[in-house]
Image 1 (cartoon, rainbow, N blue to C red):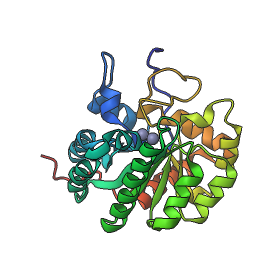
Image 2 (image 1 turned 90 degrees about the vertical axis):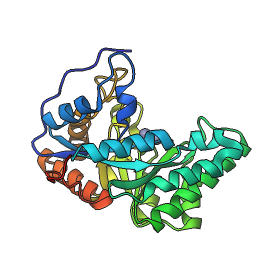
Image 3 (image 1 turned 180 degrees about the vertical axis):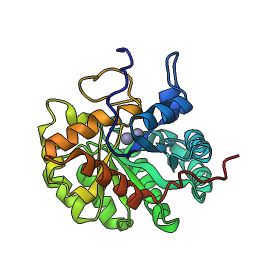
Image 4 (image 1 turned 120 degrees about the vertical axis):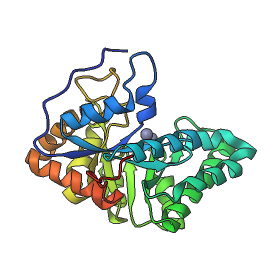
Length: 283
Ligand SMILES: [Zn+2]
Ligand SMILES: [Zn+2]
């Protein structure tokens, strides 16, 4: 893996990294601790993060980060690829996960959805759908945002949401489809969240989706430690690299950078609520 990039120029206005995995960023010899992730990001204007769990343990970890840092809120879930592997143990794991949701710093249920890239067996895909339906029901019952993971499963995801009913606030994390599917999601009231992949040369259809997304439906994310934007593709990602992607979004859309930052930040509040930065109850 390439060396970790240096800090980019700070953004003119604060923005939110709408999807990251602090525990995964911290892994390995030269991982960044959660503290380092949070402070390096804040130093370049990325003042708020959504830390996302993929199983019971990492979801509990995300909640611990959200309790510790004013700039972090949590999303909790069984990732679709984990759900697919659980077999008979799925209902018990879903029950353990549900016990975490009703917490004031948990603002999202997800990442959940379907992943047909890594999960190809029909029986395993059925488990993904079962888990996805449970997460959709929780997002509504607990009034949390639904965080969608969609890999090569665009239409099936929207079909499940149509059948179950879309929650009020749905984020397509790591949006990866074209303008046609973007319209379907936008018409259903969803927010589209763009990571570093939007900077990758072959992804012109994704950039078209970006350009047709209204500024009040747009989010930016890292999905760190993955999907590092060009020119750092292949290096480890972390929230302090959001400015690289945010600048690219502004260029592609012809937006003023400061105005775009304000929109990205306000949209994150619309989806995940107030972070409560500066609250004075830190222990
Ligand atoms: Zn994902
Ligand atoms: Zn993720």
